Amino acid sequence: ALRGVRLTSEAIVWSQTQLLAVYGTVSALVTALAAAVIIVTLFTGCSLRLAFFVLIVLSSIIALVISALVALGWSIGVVEAIALTTLVGLAVDFSLHIAQAYAVAEPESYIDVGAEKDNVSARRVARAQLSTRSIAPAIVSAAMSTVLALVPMLWCHLRLCWIFSLITMGALLLSVLASLHFLVPMLMCFGPSKLDSHLLKAVFGSLPRAFLTLSLIGGCVVFVAWAELRERAFDTLAL
Image: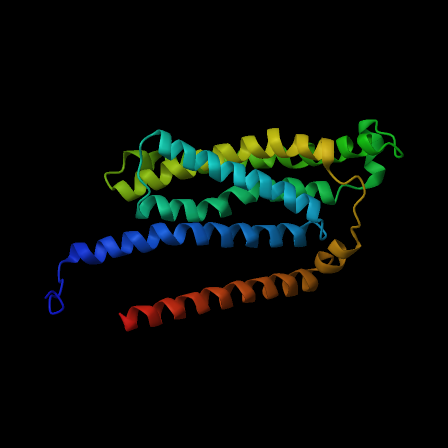
């Protein structure tokens, strides 16, 4: 009896948009985590162990943010779904810097921190100390500058702006804390003591090689995004 009924209210379109955004958040997070692992693996000289540690840190940050939203009684809507989707890109930045600095630490620098070359545990601690010493100030400064830039958005009347800024600020602070106080201890205890930097130098050892590698990565990302948008456009036209 209701086959001839047509719904023309804009609320129906908005509710469908919310459902698609919420249901697509899980697949977007999984895709972003997989892409982050691939990028970390590439930039650390194909070290799967470092990529696994970064994956643990990212998963912990996402779990903490979602738990905080649930504890505050917020429902996952379109704004929260967009913020969570971009969360992985924000959170992976600092962990990637530390992992990459750990990977490129030179063995002869161990003497500077008093580590013995034949002691595996000492080599791990030395690599972690050297990477933290070289990159931690830049990480903290970058996070603080971004957080301060987002503070004025908290007084914005648009719900989209202040919720997005609040989630972004929390994610940045958690990312810094997790990178320095979770990832670094993991590297000290379980990180690889010896890393082959030949592949890393072969891929990023010169400006043309770095440009070619980044172009290939960017081309893959653009192709995946184009294919996804094309599929969504066809689905919209079918409706």
